[in-house]
Image (cartoon, rainbow, N blue to C red; front, side):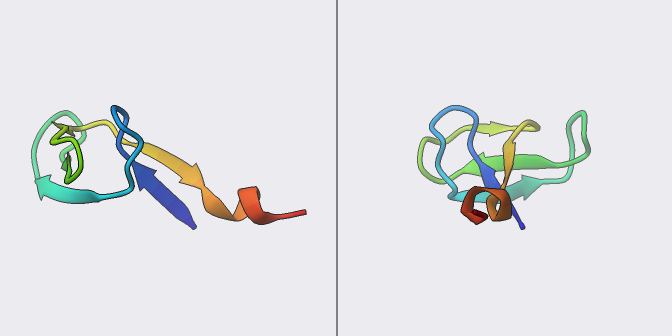
Length: 50
């Protein structure tokens, strides 16, 4: 499972803003207001494995 987070503030409150930009998708952070093509994806399952 992938967790998408904001590259500026690290919040997981990310929503799809619109379809455009370099990647074809633009995201918006509901916490800090960041809007852009780049987000950070983390593999959550690896963090919880022993």
